[in-house]
Image (cartoon, rainbow, N blue to C red; front, side):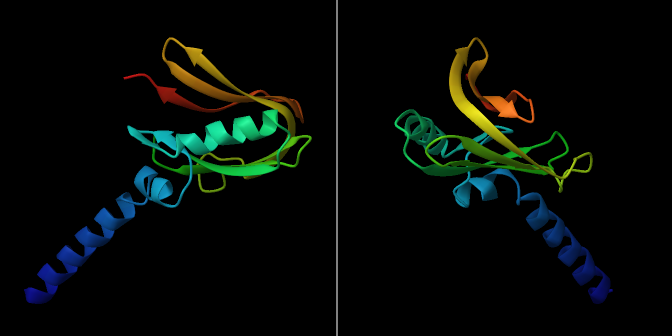
Amino acid sequence: MKVIKLLLISSLLITLVGCSNGPEKAKKNGDVVSDFGVVGNMYKLDKFILDTESKTQSKVNITRFTKEGDPIYIHLDFNGREILMEKDSSRDKNGKGIKKFICKSISKLEKSDGTHYEVADCQPNTISELLVYQKK
């Protein structure tokens, strides 16, 4: 009986720890996050935008989460001329793997529902909303 209780408690703890590897962990790792009520490190994305405007090399990592809690990783690397974007959805059950883009611009737009961060003028052709910082 003690063995069964121990196994049940162990399983519960493993499940709880697994569930905590979402937005809070990404935030603690230094990634920009704005999902499921967790907001973190937005200043890094704002600094990245300023760096692109001043033509200063810069990098930033963003972690997004699907409704199911699967992570999508976005890495932005500005080399002084263009933004290299790598979007990794390989851990998303419905993901399409790793895609790479070269983009000319990134913007921060204030809208009625919050602040939207987007990249544009990308090859292959895409306009991508990186994340939305919801208004409270």
